[in-house]
Image 1: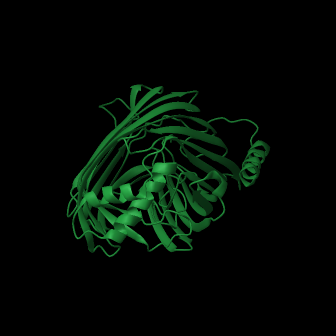
Image 2: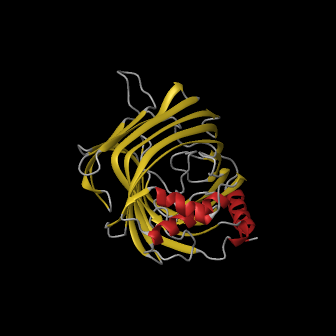
Image 3: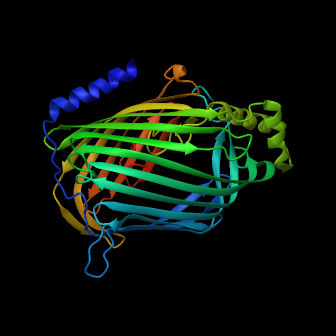
Length: 415
């Protein structure tokens, strides 16, 4: 009932403020822009070092303008590696687009929470250390009606080796040697009934994705995940915007994996060859048991949703969130700038105030039994080349976070 009420409010507000939608800018911009930045990093369990980012939007070939975007990240120090991305490659200009990328890292890490529920302890996690990590992705998009309707397919291949489990301070709990490799495929569509794809001020955007997660072994689950991302934009104060977002993602299990806890503990133990910690192994096995039974639809936390929480903080087979953001546009004049490390055309500068709430569960009926909230303030610099430079300060029950990224929040594969 709460979900239906929220969606009803979005539709009523949009209907009352929008009579007809016309794009106010060019939807295939070819203005060249670039950004180069140093990226120092400290990653618990992995190390520290320095990265270098280069991003180039709408790269021309001689006198020919294109929509091709190129991004590269070179990482030095304890991790070592790099990422190369090419997006909006015009296979058929303004109709058929390709995105492709690959990343390789000598070392990496991520947090594994011992309990993925909403009421879990934020300090109760271990650090999974990876080595020889590689990912590849490809996306193909057919776009029509001035980019108001897209159909896309997205594929990834990931490969890595779990080399160690560490505590939250980075101290070794036990060593391991377990290789993982998996493929996933997402298909979906996007309806972008707004006045601008990059910086919408009015309209409605709906993105649907269906992601297949087939079993990778006889004891693994076979499931698929359906995700819905609905955002409404309501014009206020001349050329400012009030945005409302609803996100829902749910896993449907076609075949459960092995849910026998003794078997899963024995399997986790088999990956350990030094300093084996039985308590940590048992807790990781319980998480695997939940995934094998219910699947996994994603998580809350990070740069897109519930921004005051760390990435992957809450996860489950069912995920739902909703948010509101007031984007106060202080300027919409086009102003070219060139500061050596960044060059572009400023088309908007905004101060944003936002509020979000979200919930996760393994069963749909348990959603919103518990929730967490996040609120904050940020700035957005919108450019003619398509970059949106975002700086957010968010706070919630577990403290605050600072986010620097190059897109609006609430993103999905469809954007």
